[in-house]
Length: 118
Image (cartoon, rainbow, N blue to C red; front, side, top):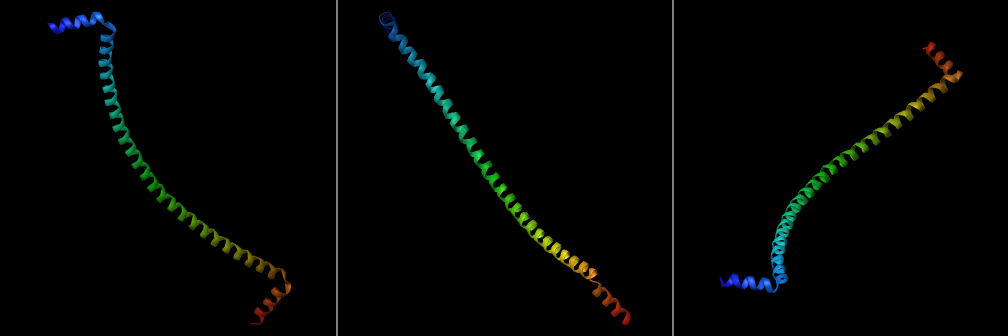
């Protein structure tokens, strides 16, 4: 009873102070709730960050392997292209030789004469 009488008297004498104290208690609960929510967010964000880092490492590993395969394929294509160019050059040289011999009447006639003698 004395406690309630003292509370009523304090409320009449200093209503703003009592309201401020009640507001402090309410704000304290709100801050505690916000801290708990922040801690939960930190925990979830940390877990998501770990998942993202793992996915990034897996992607880098997979991409690195694919890049190595691509470089190997490019090297093989380059070698094939060099071989093809060399063969093409050789075919061109042989074609030039054949046409130059066909154009030279003495070369063709000498061959025919040699073949007919044999």
